[in-house]
Image (cartoon, rainbow, N blue to C red; front, side):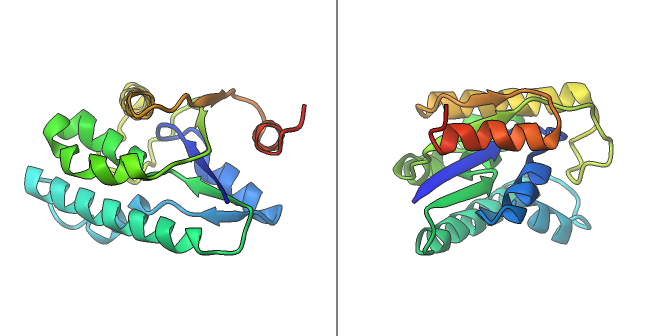
Length: 177
């Protein structure tokens, strides 16, 4: 099974691309963090709560990926991978906040990482820290830095209409010119 991560900062079109790929019949794994953050939105975001959320996000994403790997499909597209949540944690809580996760992350292998170029910022983000374009850029840079540090070379997907982005990704994944 090829595992392909669609990543990027807030407002980069990841979920839209995942939904289009799903409509085309590809297997997808939707973003885990949205569910957990939404469920815990009522809890003040302290350092302790931030670590609790990170643990929940990481463990749930890990379990979802494990289950998906047992599925009978050739290609799986992920709306963010395990590394994405750690990119947030690295940015806001520092290196020590991700150390315990690194062995599990290093054992996982993704076949392609597509980093979506940021689109115009929409302030309706679901995480409290997604306040503006500058913050979205910092998040994206942290995620990118961590993927590179872990040996990946993300392919940048330019700003273009959704269908063109999907075609761009599929040409690479399917080995088409």
